[in-house]
Image (cartoon, rainbow, N blue to C red):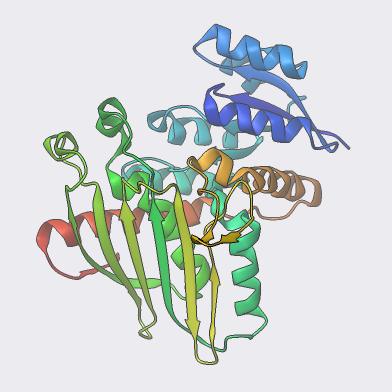
Length: 330
């Protein structure tokens, strides 16, 4: 069986997913849709897919699945539409910027028995997966504290900030999902602080560029998240999990992993400077997992419920910072 897939959205991340499909012998990209005709045509030419409209893709019974890489404000509608059409759905995060709309979308998926996977790619990073494996194997005992450092090399443009939903729904949402992935318990409370230290324009747009959050489960397990829109030394992505018997951590990755020692000391090459290169393996692995779920008729993970939980945590973080108090997660 070859899984036939249509790509909705031929932008930057769409190209990454198209490449992953092309490299997986179990699947074939058969259609591409995008409002920008040249972008769709470029992917179609490179992969042998056809350029089609979203309506035509929905109506085509030979297409098994869709990958949604369109703007965020279209995600919930497209998820519902293709779940009702009986196609498996992979959608980039978030489901929506509004929790109520995301919850309504999840309800529709549940009602129609849809198969929907959310694009939290960091769960598939081999280094982070190794951390989770160490936890599952009992090598560090019971999880007690998690530390997540996630800092971008520089802030996105103002036009992006305006539609992003803010740092917690756009950037930290990945860290919320990773916190749930590593803590092993649902998060009960969120507290923290945020400010504008990088670019005053971000503050003028009602957002933050620097944030520190503390998440806690009902049993007292904790996760500390450090976010910044500026890391002059590169794309900073680290995690550490402290357990009752020890700790496990994943360090920053570099395009070249070497170390030079001489009279000036020890030096290593710079970090990756972009998420597309840092998480190349993760992007390929998540598409492979999506195809696995279709082939084996299993529930995809991360699920739309995982997306809903991460969004609820983002909303709690917004309130915690604004109201300067600890917020219980609803």
